Length: 430
Image 1 (cartoon, rainbow, N blue to C red):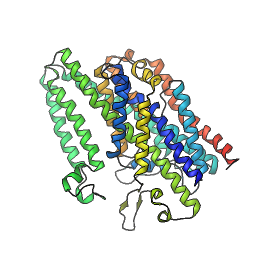
Image 2 (cartoon, rainbow, N blue to C red):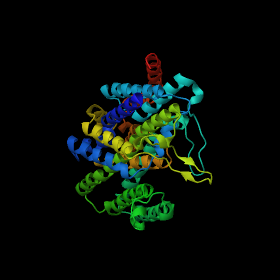
Image 3 (cartoon, helix red, strand yellow):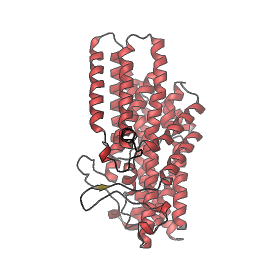
Image 4 (cartoon, rainbow, N blue to C red):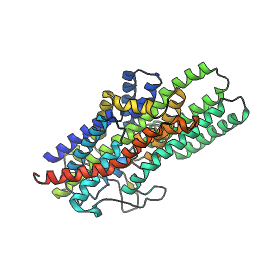
């Protein structure tokens, strides 16, 4: 039990470090454009980091918890992985490198598991169910490339849409109206009806549907797209000064949306590690979940005898602690990385701020929907590059970008190696 408690404490420490390490992801553009002061920006981001608790489910947490076979590892493996992740996060923070805290944690977990039981213990690739993406470490590695690429493409597309909407022609307005209609129809068909909700939050059918985490996420996506669409319809009638002022106000929305995605994505990874540690403790002790104290009763998502999906169970204190830790960490800031993200990749104006943060938020929401743990750092960096490309390739500082890519590529193998070393050292004493 002592090691389990230590893992939980260190996992929350990592979550706190994740918050101030990745604070730049959500606040760099809004600080660079002077929409908010640095202090206001971190308070804004921290609030929405924590608010994500009511928006997202546990899909990403479940994926992370199943990185390695919990029947074949021990608590020392998870402890080594968390220690390695903390070390690499602090190193990259010290040098101002916006590396992925997500990949650090997953690389550490996988590296320690391999050191303990060999390559077969890691879930490298697993076919997904109907309508779901495959899972496993190989999918996570693939999204080292895909997440920033998707962010860049979406950001570039939004930028082009806005630029055309600034022209006094009817074509962009017709496109915008069609997009608004398509968004409403698409989101309507994504809603989970009341009879499909496992645990309604309210007695009222309406409020239970409205505040179902799956539905809230789609409502947010619709709100973001419809807000930008409304701006696009009037963009051509605004002066340069008026459009800049409106874009600055919209940055509050886009940064809030990205902070929600950041909190929901990154906090779930720590939730997954804590859940895996508790499951390993149960397996090692040969006990049942029901015999554990209520505050430690954790179970993975499974399928019952009738083929129905039984959702994962997690005591409320775990997500609350994780969202709280990342929120407090974000309040602490990460100013070295803010400088890199906010000015060294490309010059950021309110226009680039809105497009990059919106693209990053949409990318995080969709990947969370498919239970893929992606890097918020990679996502927002790709989004910033995508918005910068509308001004030409010379607008992006490729020297800095290449250095960032090297940090991304090295994160998983380096954190895995650190975790393996940590595991061998810990095994001498535990």
